Length: 515
Image (cartoon, rainbow, N blue to C red; front, top):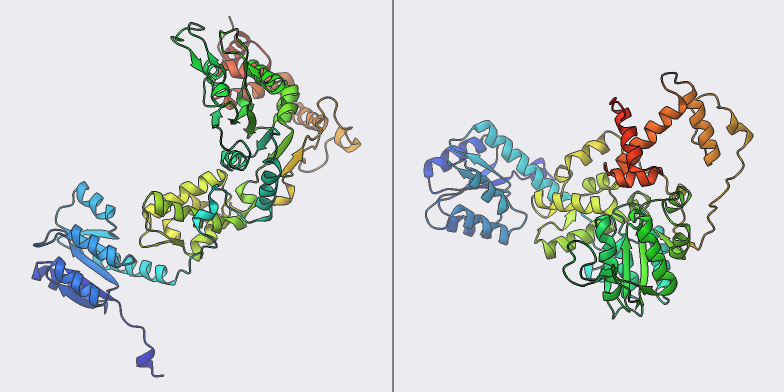
């Protein structure tokens, strides 16, 4: 084979403009880089030329006689989805930029041309085209219809989740779903419901953290007219509306102790009373609860009822974080792209291997919800039908490039399933002798409460600026206020003090004199 026959074919650029001088001057600029230039004097002519043989890149004027540049762009993109088009305009308005990108333009340039900018845009567009063409992309294993529950994954961790779902659907056992935010707890709850014998009855979801404390009981149990200010009529609560069906209580760890008591009664007796009412109403409801908080710790701190915990914790299903099942990411991304194509009308269908490598190396602190947001954002920005590395969110790329995305080992994770696990609520394991004294070098995190207290005591003893109790009080108050976003009522309940006492402590911490 000769050198001439093995040399790569130079890229072809089509210039569409009804101004012959523009075509000539732009052709000279682009021709200086050995690109093959073809010209068309109208949108109709350009469409016909592209139909004969699609060019590698198109420079297209917006305002022309005959069909407009935007109409021509739509025709070209419809016939050749991977064709990259740069629009040319003499009017650099916001409307021009928005319309250009809305209809799939790769970029746009202003007239009169800056030669260096034109060449840079052309080089960038042709490199993007080459990346798209060489991207293998993820090949769908199954169709999106096979994921009708919306739960995607074939990793061992997710296979265990599916097994547990199958085990609990045949009965009315109460299920407690735990896991980090964004792992899909409501999807799992809906899946349990859909495969249960109650699937013909209502399913209702209540986010306990999103409803104000003074309204949560009315939301769940309903209220009678005049039972409180603003109660102008009778209201039927979720338990009544959901009779015979399934009620999903999300973020149940954020529920007050008073409301917890009423929930416990429903689980024990199957009965409710509306707020302000005296009538006892039967509620045949299967309950599924979820939380991203450690309820065992809350029970020890007396911020969650021990008896309610045991009632809820008949079967516990822990959802793995996304970093524990990184092998599922290609499958999840494929499903997301299929759904985006159907619901959001995006044109992206695959992800380049380089971009997929970045996605599988990131930690995903926001789990599947964060991944979904990143894919949607990238699909909107991407040119053509492939997400490239440059289309991914900048912060994601920066984090991975900085080496801050090494996933934690999944071996340390808690078990996915626990059936009525015994939880020691009083007394703690004996502390090893080594834990009584600080070890030399960097201190390791103690495994028991006693060990933790010894560790804290040793660390704070070295600080002479504050007493140990002063420092502990300040730290605990700050943590409680942060946990409840400044809500003094919730923070004081967590700390076990009155709101008035908390206010006084906060005044002291701010340097203000106590009353």
